[in-house]
Image (cartoon, rainbow, N blue to C red; front, side, top):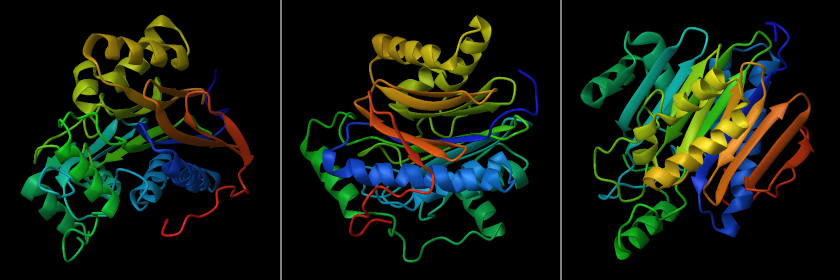
Length: 322
């Protein structure tokens, strides 16, 4: 391994969980588009931070994902968003939580990283920072709520209200450029029926997101209340380094160890410092895609591994999609 010879890669996930068959094409269309858009940033010598931000923005605007538009609803029927972003070259981070009525939390998280002087903002301070930075909130409020997320909340209320209901989700992206710079970003609406003010793993650096040029980058999805207890994002990268093993087997092992000890399921996408890809999940589904060169790889369930030229658009657009 030596710096300057890495082939750029951008990888995304669209959330781990159990997804109904009719929603899988929409998710695959969304993750492959996000991977391509993010990769284009790298292809024209944009930064890895810009690349992961743009990839995540695609999914935040897509009703098939639990982030931005289409996010899961809390117990009161509102959308509360969490996001984080990390620059592996400097370890600069930006996180936010409990955000309402902003379509692209990941862009605000990037501003927190680059302009706030802090790592993590919440509440009134986050709102005033966003307004100072020129972000515009949706008026009237509530426009991020979709009928699908409303129905999911009603189903949850009618059930035994265990947090396993719904398809879960979160979206994330990890990128590496030709110089070995790495960034990671994650954005979510959390879990259906969550208490107002609940924070999951997504905005917590080391749990939901981590990037370090010397270790790699990772974005998590799944049962956030459990992922937080094992700091899974950092643990996967650090364990691979300490044991001098590839990320893929380490990720698989640590996901299973977490579930065996604490329950729950999770998934992740990751890149090591040489640009090798890891895709791991012990949930039934996790939509993912990555672009390297002119090829996009993608899948949604365990055995899925599909390849297509980056110029193809094989998924028929569904009515009322993007």
